[in-house]
Length: 305
Image (cartoon, rainbow, N blue to C red):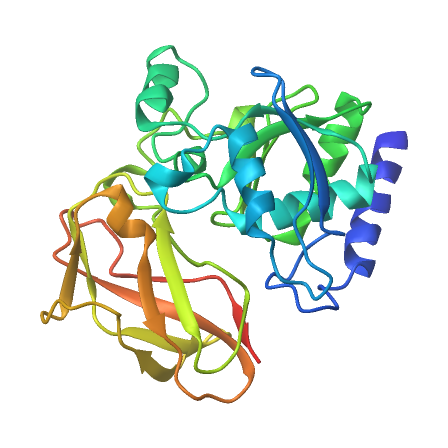
């Protein structure tokens, strides 16, 4: 009974928390302050990653990268900024000002495969590979709170969240989904042939005529193509075409091949003059290496202001 009351209370808190009221580029964001410690390396930071106007502090994300073990220079980007905003949002709701104890941050492909070879719960297409995920627990919080937090996050349908028992929670900024130990599909071929490939924008909020960065995660195989241009569609069931978004590339062919992880992480276009509203971005695949790979993917919702 107590556990159910805790879950209901957390869900109620999530519902009453509105999207960011200031100019932060994400729908869900906390107060802009986080304390994170890597339990394996001992590295820890306490950062303020938001400026007063809601913009992001680049130097704060460099510090976060170091705790995650993320190779910033090699990747040319940071740990997912959306992931950090989500983490901050949920921590503020249940344990404001408590330290996040990180048990797994960035994983190289080699290390992720090593975990798989050892029979550990590590997906072939893990979001950890792109700096989009962390496994963590909250200082001073028990397993019951972790399970209640997992239950509550999954009702938000905003992200990936897993719970394997105990205090640890997996959180990622990938495709909205949830799982427990018994429902995890890491030892199946569910993600093979890019069947669960996820297409995302870097931010949630944009202004008309600004630059748009998109990328893929949960990629099982490289060597596929995307059509140029992308398509901006309505954020509803019909997903009707609004306009096209020409890719920022010198390649003249209308099928842009993506042959490695780095190429899938930086896909740029420019937003045209457009009415304010909620939209999504559609990408159509070409040169598919597998017949059962999807024909297209549609991004997370975005707001153009």
